[in-house]
Image 1: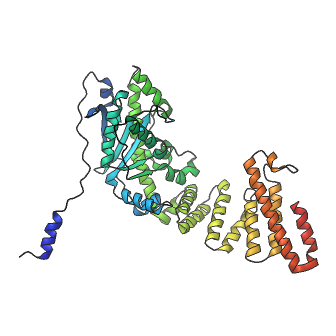
Image 2: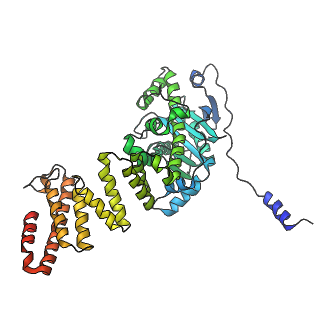
Image 3: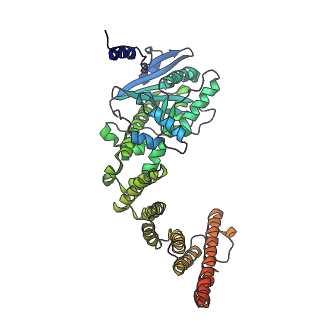
Length: 452
């Protein structure tokens, strides 16, 4: 008689298993009357809406990067906890990911803009499978969109670079305009532009994918380069020239450019995944500006202690002089939020000597000495110093109203700050006068004169 364990094992074996995404359908080889397909090295795909060109290649690099739970948690964390959990759950299975990048007939988007090349990639056999769907003519758009819809049905987790702003809204618009093909439903959409901007913009300035490849991903080590790459601004014209009967040769460069973007996108996820997963272990080997960017990213995601540590490491690692006051200010605010006022005061006193942070530091020190140590005279000193700094700040013109300043917004901010300092000074004057009586006269007279 079979044991209960055996029975349950047999029952368990009868449960349906999750089906792996199917392979794309086979392609028909182009004939000699289809020169663009022969030039681009693609095959002809067909569905109920007609034909389109599909170009398929498999690359061994970048290699598959298993997503770290720590990295996914940070990347998905938003103020909407329910949405964060849903996105995190969808991203946990990389077999459902689809990297996407488009080449279009215009860089500004709009209803007249076509995505004539849609690049797709997914992890397969430890490497990256790339499929590029190409419009040999604009009337093939329905066929291309139908094929894209089927890919997204199998892999509904989209990974892009600026795709939330450009690529996906453009494709949504093209789906809608067909009035026949429904807009695919995404389980999640991870746009890597935003974490990349947070982590590396301070050091690089530009976070274009090509710059990230060159200066962050080390594309040469990964086995590719862009020495013969074409400029994105030229791509629409190359396609229009082809449609008008011109040479299709430049489009081979467009296809390669799109392949490189897809490979760079996959490699970028691997890099972000490693950075966020490494935590404090990698701080000592990270560029100081990258650490400062990481600290700001971590702070926005609610990792306050780790953000403080990263910022402190950045200062100790030799943060460039122009960024040191900003980092010191961040450390002061983080220390204040943690209740470490002694450390916060030390940072604020350091910032008093910086012309760009002096006003902020004086305000914080005045608050500290008034509310926490009750050293009202010290608080008055920093109020007066703050008022003096406001008078000498850029854009201030003695004798003119705030409306006469060059930047109205800056003028309004300065006026609000001035009013806050004056109100604080009046309150301190009243408290000191009430406590000390007539003996406070000289101090109060000096304070009143300085506030005018």
